[in-house]
Image (tube, rainbow, N blue to C red; front, side):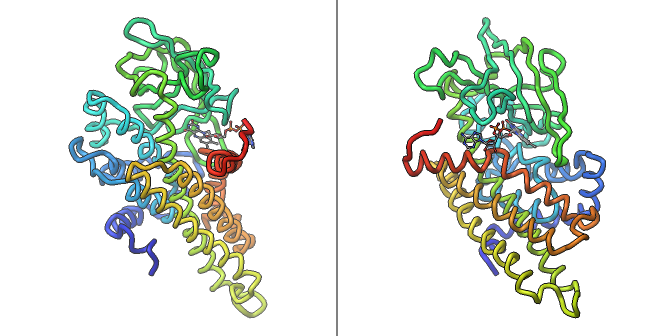
Length: 386
Ligand SMILES: Cc1cc2nc3c(=O)[nH]c(=O)nc-3n(C[C@H](O)[C@H](O)[C@H](O)COP(=O)(O)OP(=O)(O)OC[C@H]3O[C@@H](n4cnc5c(N)ncnc54)[C@H](O)[C@@H]3O)c2cc1C
């Protein structure tokens, strides 16, 4: 019995039970038709899991990032993909920590009840990529509104969300002292925006991940919808990104455990040359190594959760947890597909689907190289490369 099996056992058991109602066949069929797991996300919402981080006073469960990470981990460990709904968990951080009392009162009870979904966050742009402070989408104040122009790319779950957190530039880069200044965050009501200044173009992709390009042409957003202070948005987004990286780490740990369970079972049963393939050390060692790496990544995930929930700086730990967990789940995925032989490629085994899903986390929401650059320069103090 490991800490992973005992920590937050009540949350873990309840999510496992819910997930058991949606077996692999359900997720496989949705993947094949590039659908969205509506019934699964509805069940998570009705059970209150999508409102885990919302305080009691607004109708949520008032749980911390640690519990939220267990929810995400268990979804992936059950063979599902939290990518369909994890946005609501980490987008919440920006609203919870930096939203005004009026904004929280307006949105949180409805998000908690499931009436509204906050699943989307628009940061990435086609021309600037990982260089977030150089984003070109602008929001210009005109009376009691801001007028938004620009473009975003890879913005997930917009077609299954009512609200979106949007990062824009409100002061031109040339006029700020630090490049991280002059950026502002809005909460956008997608029901008012789409077709009235905002266009959505879906991007078909390798994973069954609902993601789109967004185009803004004079989209008007009420000034009331700005979160926090004008010009301070980058700081607010970073808070949310630390939550996001920690939650993605937990999802990768869930994936890693799914792959290791699956391949351990298969290697114990598949007999070739008159003995189970798992009796060969050439098969055992990559599986054992992946297990070691998943367990080690889990320790950093708990450290990041603890610091985040204590409102202490956790940028280094959140990034390192995401780095370690994404690497570990990818190693586990490789061992799993390799030792399933040809069957690893057959959809009905679910390995190829999970393999594609976990590969994403080497690139998004932050690429492995950018994490290493962060650690080299912000943790170790090496000279800045950008
Ligand atoms: C399925 C999917 C869903 C996504 N969902 C969202 C979302 O909901 N919201 C959102 O805002 N974004 C989203 N993204 C975007 C994602 O965060 C970016 O793809 C990611 O941050 C990388 O940015 P980029 O694609 O522009 O790559 P680039 O920045 O162009 O980088 C390309 C490659 O070059 C490397 N590289 C770049 N600069 C350096 C450097 N200085 N040193 C070393 N290596 C470097 C990177 O590591 C990367 O491997 C999503 C992406 C995908 C694929």
